[in-house]
Length: 308
Image 1 (tube, rainbow, N blue to C red):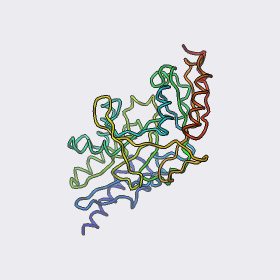
Image 2: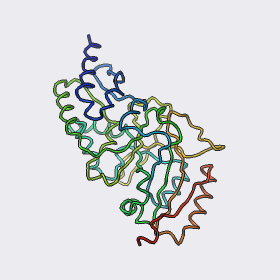
Image 3: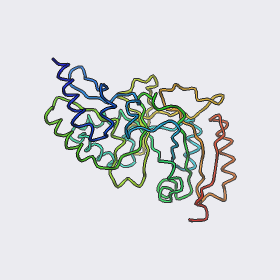
């Protein structure tokens, strides 16, 4: 009886609510939702392949652009990794409000919201097309005195478990919000865990960023690489992070295929650092060869001479 009731509720949610997020999400998740032991709990699967035909997926070979400072670039190389932090480390504490409201988390107790934020770790990129975007250089590239780093996804995200890579969505999900809220009102004993999608939805005024996010969801992942490192942010709050490896040994990234394998392909030096370009290029290439196991390509931004 319990099983048939769960099947009915699952089908109802898949048919009446889920398509309003993504038309292909219903097909992708059929049979992938699971019941909790003491309550009906709809949970998005940890296997990334179920998202392959939805907007919550990007394929192998994707190029990811990351604006940062020269200092942070050398820290990334030194660490041999980039870091994904939990949602407590957001630069804008109000940034998550839109997503919480979209998925009805704003009605939950503060403790439940904190759990959702702690179980999801993210790192941010944007699409490669933003490489010469002056606004992005000014906002995130130290007004041309920083760098942009191009990373490549080297393995097939279809095989990832617990990790997901997708464009951030900025369009309000008005119809979904309505249907989702009605469903929860009709079935108050059902918990729908959309914590892994929180990071892929932001308010429309962030659209200029055209952000891409790589996320790891602690709650739903079964991957063997389920380790987190504790840190304290600038507000003296405890945060967790994990490392996404960039190193190679004998020309290969030796980690398993069920976690992201990224490579630092190229560094674009900011347009206000042209006088130091050759020195910086030599330092980056020498250091990347020593630490990462390969030489990173280095170029000067095409915006040189256009802006000061």
